[in-house]
Image (cartoon, rainbow, N blue to C red; front, side):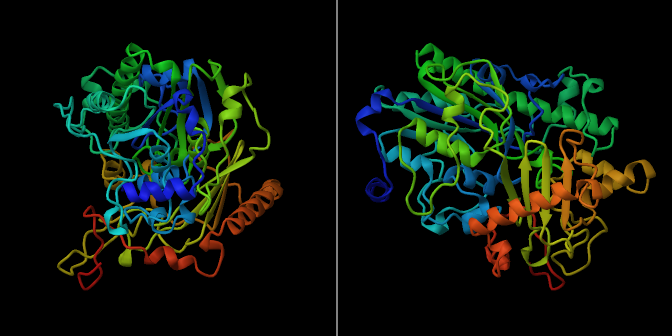
Length: 507
């Protein structure tokens, strides 16, 4: 690793070393599977997120942060590299490898004098070692501290205590970067945890793509319990920095990697799959109490971190984001930089959901008002093939597939009641094949239920966004708009979770 860091220092434009004492600490807190509206700062009436709300109150709350992918590892890889998933080869698919030629920002920070580390989930799932990396791309791990989790399904990693251990190991005069990768609210949950904690199911806002039934409301409450667990550890970290007198010079960034683990959310480029919470504070630099509506991406967060640390980006395989510092340091709110018109997202393979590990290829363009989606493989089932062969070569049960949807009480209910006319439409929304293009007006349809792509009144908007996407993907070398789009199907998957055997019992 030391040799690799030396190479990074030599070739990747690190600057500003003489000003190390003036550079901020950086705390990046990233939950696992949390959609945009599910924080009290955004007005959710049930989930309580005082730490997130504090960061928003003492800094800036963003209303249009879009993840580069609706799946864990490609989204995190995009954040680490500052490049969209289709620009980073294997790392742009779920549970794959991570080529070393793509430099990650924690290495750049470390080579410039930062003390770096992570707790919980860094980059993953996947296998970084087969690519020649000797540690997680998020940095050295601090996961030794453990505690008894409050609920089943919650990790035993004591995130806040590991942050304390990280701070004790660091030279007091050294700026730090810490990646707090909470493993919650990723499934599985303790069933009934939300109700047992006194949360009122009647107050839950059930998204329009899910059936409004008690089983679903209870499942959402259990999801809220784990969001609050993430927030509680964040609060402990903020308190530790406050007590040490270091919070004012710490850039705090709080977000999530992809959307809620429910049907038609996670692993989908609809709003609930890619629209993320985001709050950023830096008391010494950022005017507080503002809300910004400009569309922003994780690749912009990467650029922001490097700009704040006065570290130059890589010259080879350059980052594609634009630093948020100018808008953060301004006193403006609402639309701050009108030239930030659109951001992008996309996916390839998520889980092992089809024979030969085939994926479901999508790209999405999000403007302030619209979401445009291009489905490159509309002949495939978006949630995975419905039925699969078991390892013994026998055909399994109907609805035994759909591996791109996390196992959960909500989806179990939908499958069991799929013949009920009131439930059937929700089941179809989750699993049915989709057209090559989709267009949604987010102002009136944030749950993405009414596809406007065939509406004559929206033809001009569709044409404009289609061209914007094509131009951007072509300029940025997305194989899907060239002759080599199937390259994504060749990237090996590294995960013991879920298999999809073929007729001969082979994947």
